[in-house]
Image (cartoon, rainbow, N blue to C red; front, top):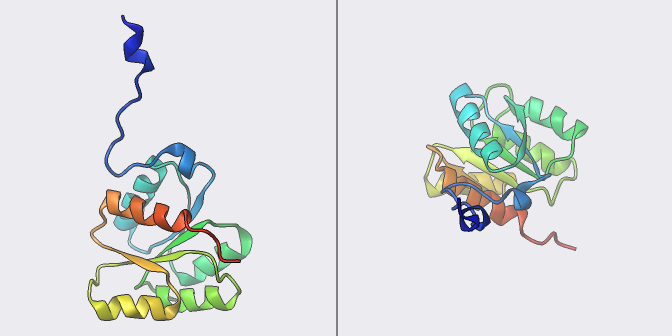
Length: 147
């Protein structure tokens, strides 16, 4: 066997990220739909992120008070407390610089505006594209924190 084979880097797969960029980054995934939750969790773990789960806005608030997160993925429509109300509450708790990305099947400009008005930084539409999800997350994680 030639040593050339072992010295070459494996090609990157679409929708993945370099573990060095994502290592140590913790994402809170707030999603009530079990199939969307599992799919998103698999995409994030495969990209090298640590993932914690919440099934509604109330659970997300409990998690925020207990752990440190680098980014939140927040479903818009959930029982008990929806993503918009949870985002407003997270911002009111003082988490101004924590990136919050909305997850929604609603792709209308008015829905995007509702996300932004609630305090979300951006949004990702469902059905989820692994590549688009990881690119959007990395874009927000790599932004400088305002002084």
